[in-house]
Amino acid sequence: MTDRKLHFDQAYLPSGWAANVCISLDAAGDISSVETNVAPAGAERIGGIALPGVPNVHSHAHQRAMAGLAERSGPGPDSFWTWREVMYGFLDRMSPDDLEAIAAQLYVEMLKSGFTSVGEFQYLHNQVDGAPYERRAEMSLRTVAAACDTGIGITSLPTLYAYGGFGGAAPAGRQNRFLNSAESFLHVVETLNEAGRGDGNQSLGISPHSLRAVTAELLGEVITGLDDMVPDAPVHIHVAEQTKEIDDCIGWTGGARPVEYLLDQFQVSGRWCLIHATHMTPDETAAVARSNAVVGLCPTTEANLGDGLFPANDYLRLDGRIAIGSDSHISVSPVEDLRLLEYGQRLQHRARNVLAHGADVSTGRQLFDRVLAGGAQCLGRSIGALEAGARADIAVLDACSPLLVGRQDDAIIDSWIFSGNQPAVSHVFVGGRHVVRDGRHIAEEETLNRYRAAITRLAE
Image (tube, rainbow, N blue to C red; front, side, top):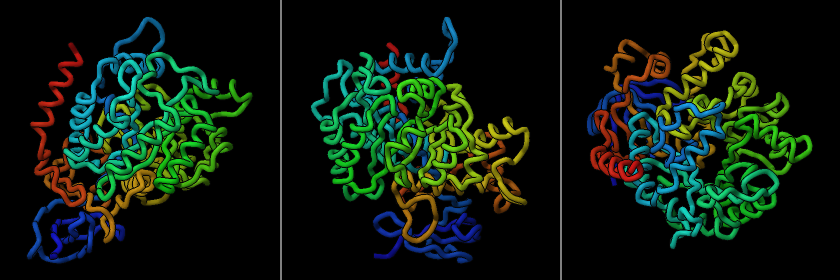
């Protein structure tokens, strides 16, 4: 069978920038070959500037429905913990149909922004009263269905949640939707593993919610069961996001901080993704960098919640690995997250191009390269590069966009990231499927109508 061929005016390849690039795709949706400086004869001419699609490694899809609804001040100081109560209240009526509609709308927005894959950290396992659904994996399967319908690649990360605080504290009533035993959780994992078998756009890992929500014994049991099904599958965990979490962990352990405790209890390695890791000591920062784990940063959500600033300058100087995620989805934009990552460091250090780390280095390209590699690693998929053998996940920038007119090579990435939020993505391919054409998703209207119906019902 003859490969399908796509022709681009420019492309960002592992070897650097190239012109007149022809990318051949096989029947499975992988890249079979890349040719440069060739005419478009026999290929579908797309034009534009082809980039690897960006991995979004941390998503709570249901939270997209409440974006903007926690921005009214309360009677006392507001924090992550007061925001969490608003979020919990929003979940009291969310049905499987609602979640699927919300996730589909979110994934359309991700694709249009240049994200081509998502790590879905899904913890709404049960009905509102805590009773399991007939299909224990119902809610996770609904996010998979939304991903399949919209065409985004997905790493399902069902969330292990069993307790309400450090040391196995009893969960609060509003957490009943989240809870599983090791046995019931592994049943969810097994179901998702079967559902994604043979689909090149799906992969699987797990997400112990946090050290507050699991014990070391429970997580160890679950990782053993996971390895029997999917050896070396990704493990994502929230850690050291807020200072209260640090204080509570020190109080419970008698002195250990969350990252310190995690590194002591588990063999943290390249399969792990530490979400946020905002508050680390220099020793913890160095130890995480040495472990080859990825830190999943969510700058817009971290700013929205007032979490603090990750020690990115020190961590990246140690060659630590990073990726980005849109988390609570108060913004769905790789550009905004990458820009805010750098700008946070500029404000902290009162300097410019802080994360470039070298003379005559493109800050945008440096960050872009890091999140492509880190995202591919912690989503457990062959993505993040336009090369033979990788998944054909391609985001195409419009060279005629006002942001990019007259820009060449690395200035393209710098201008895309640091010149505002005007839409610049014209086409998107995932596994070779053309899901965004001329800036519009192929199922945009239908998906939006379903989302509107779900939000209208939830707001009643």
